[in-house]
Length: 223
Image 1 (spheres, rainbow, N blue to C red):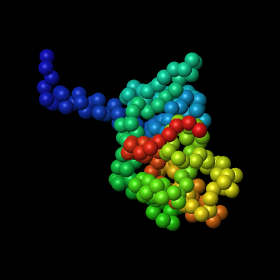
Image 2 (tube, rainbow, N blue to C red):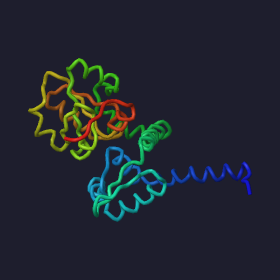
Image 3 (cartoon, one colour):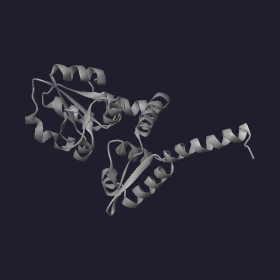
Image 4 (cartoon, rainbow, N blue to C red):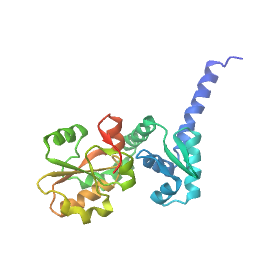
């Protein structure tokens, strides 16, 4: 028997709501943000988030049920990743809508992220122009495993917790541009604070690796 238009709409909305339910947990959003950086094992996700392996597995099951993540097996290990680029775009847009609609998000972003900028963050287009002129160094301050999975082509890997030990390797004659996981990642703002305190000219990219990749800009993988 053919469904009536109201029944069809109801069935469609029920399926749409599966996505909403899957991202109704802040922990699942955090996992999606990490998986948009690259593939991770359950153990690696547990270390990165501070959750137990059991909790991570439960959240991944919910995300898998909504087809937001995919997985592959390598021996006894299972590795997870964002299902595709559309999922990462969805996560980015979710943050953008939240900042537009929720004053609390705007306040937190202004205090912990925007407040680090003496100048406006660099746009992707501006960074590309600066890289062509050769007077800019791009530093990826995410953990090394995220850099190896994918990074802006030509960027140097200096994780935030190692930055202080590697400052002597950075030229003081060039602008240092730091980037991390996205527009709400706090790693790059923390890197700016350290770099400027040591006398470097430094700015941050306005977003991060997922947005750069989604824009079709050059990326690389490996060390």
